[in-house]
Figure 1 (tube, rainbow, N blue to C red):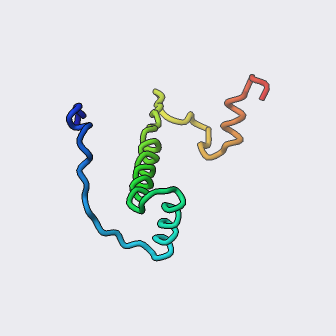
Figure 2 (cartoon, rainbow, N blue to C red):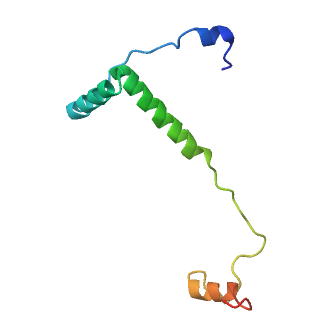
Length: 95
């Protein structure tokens, strides 16, 4: 959704919801909110936004798939024998 000047001037729509929290967690969150000069709601909202932003960063990276032409491992090579594979990789390279 594209934000316009009019929509930026309006406060965000809110949703009232009920969340059941362990008593100790709720008390610690309320104490931290007071220490930061925030309301409990502001503290929860900041935490939710931070968590969602962190997930976007994690989800943003995609591994590139690398494939090679061919028939797979050459005959006589054990794909589970790292010592054999390593020696072939570094053969004639001083390894």
